[in-house]
Amino acid sequence: MKLLVADDDPQLVRALRITLAAHGYDVIAAPDGAAAIAAAAQTHPDIVLLDLGMPKLDGIAVIEALRGWSDVPILVVSGRTGSADKVEALDAGADDYVTKPFQIDELLARLRALARRRSGASAESSVVFGEVEVDLAAKAVTRSGSRVHLTPTEWQILEHLARHPGALVTRQELLREIWGTEQVTDTGYLRLYLSQLRKKLERTPSAPEHLLTEQGMGYRLVLDPA
Image 1 (tube, rainbow, N blue to C red):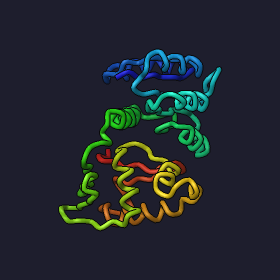
Image 2: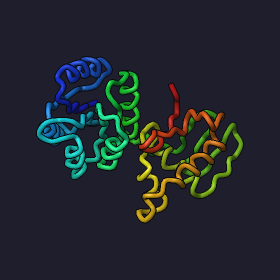
Image 3: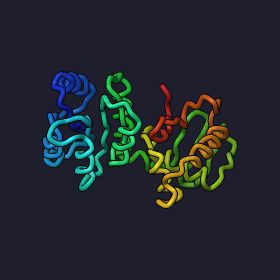
Image 4: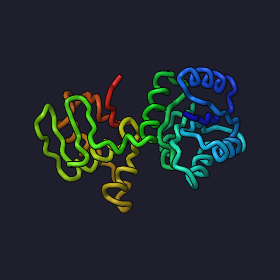
């Protein structure tokens, strides 16, 4: 799998090249934003690993430029830890966000999730997590073999998460998908519906293992928690 790493820290890029190559990735490096856009156009990577604070063009400008012509998964890896920075990157079109310093195991797990999304894992007819099976074709949910009743809105939220397993789904993405653009500022509904879904599907709703909240960003359906 071809991976474009765009970061102006040569030591980090060198370490990532060695580690990722050992896990089967073909790494292409770009030292700044302009080089990242050029490399993406020339090499057509499967995933882009992108820092935000780069010279020439910052990461947000790179995301916006790539989204003008490509749907390649973009994983932001940045030292910026504020929620505003994360939301800005995700709203610009990034698919996920990891803060520096990071554990390599977490980075590899995020890359695998994006690769599954890229390869069409979202088109699977059913998704299983814990005791729950989500049948996307039949629009049915069972838990330990028993049918679980969901409201239409609960189903829409769960279906969208199930079609993107392991990937971060932003609050605005869910709101646009379910309620339309006129209500994208109201996230209270999402908290309520996620709480109801956890009560119906999680073993311990107060400590969910699968329907996770990414603070300030959105939600993630984890099929196999570490």
